[in-house]
Length: 304
Ligand code: GLN
Image 1: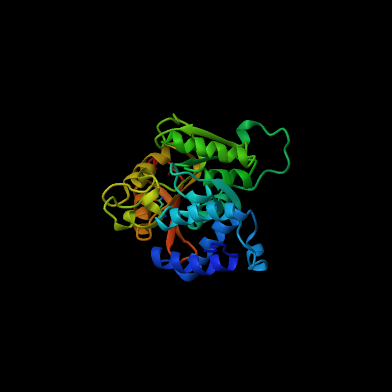
Image 2: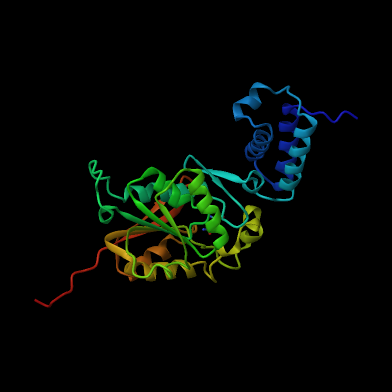
C-alpha cells in the first residue's frame, strides 16, 4: 500500500479527524494541522497553500504521525510544538507552565499603559529613577517578559512558587534577549521582603476546584497549581489583593486576570482593600477579563 500523503491530503483528512475526535470547529482543526505541518516541514503557513501537491518524506511523515497521535489523545498543541506565541514573541512552554493564552495579552497592554512614558533620554539615570513592575506567578514569563521587552527602561521582577516554571521563564528571557527581568522563587510576596513596585500584574490560578472545565481540553495537561484556587476560585486573588498595598508605591496599580464571572467579586475585593479608580476591562471575546485598581493611600484624617 502506498502510504505517501500530500500536504493537501493531510490537511483535509486529519483536519476532519481532529475536528471529530476533539470536538473542535473546522477552523480550529485546520489551524492545528497547519501548525503541526509547519513544525515538521519547517515552513511558514503560506508555504502549505502554495505547495498542496508536495509529498511528505518518510521521515517527515513519521514525525508528523507521532505528533498527530499525541494530539488525538488530547495533548495541547503548545506542548507538542514546545512553544506558543504571545504578544508577538515565541515562548518555550512545558507541562510545568501554564500555556500563555491570547486573552492574557490584554494584561500586557493595560499594564504597559499604566507605566508612565520613559523619561527623555537620560543615559545616566540612576537605578532609583527606574519604574518597577512585579509579575506574580509568572509561569513561562509571558507577561513579565513582554512588558520588559516593550519597555527596556523599566525593571521587572517576576516570581513563581514553582522552580520548574522559573527555569522555563529564565530560558525564555535569555532566548528573547530580555535582560531587565529578575526572576525570584517566591510564593506570591513571601520572598519580597518590603520591596515596593509601581505596577503589580498577575494571572493567578482562578478556577474553582470542582469546576468541570478542569477535566476538559488543554487544562488537563497543565499544572493544577496554576489553574485551581479553592472552592470559588478566588483564594489566591484574595491573598494577592490583601497583600498588594504593602508592596505598592503611592499611585501604583494592581492588575489581575480572572474568570469570566469573577469581575464583580474582584472589584469588591479591591474596594474593601482600599484601592481606587477600580475598573474591569473586556477581552476580545467581550468578557470582563482583567480588573484593577490604584493604590492611593488616603491622607490621615486629622479631624480638623
Ligand atoms: N484562562 C485559563 C483557562 O480558563 C485559566 C488561567 C488561570 O487560571 N490563570 O483555561
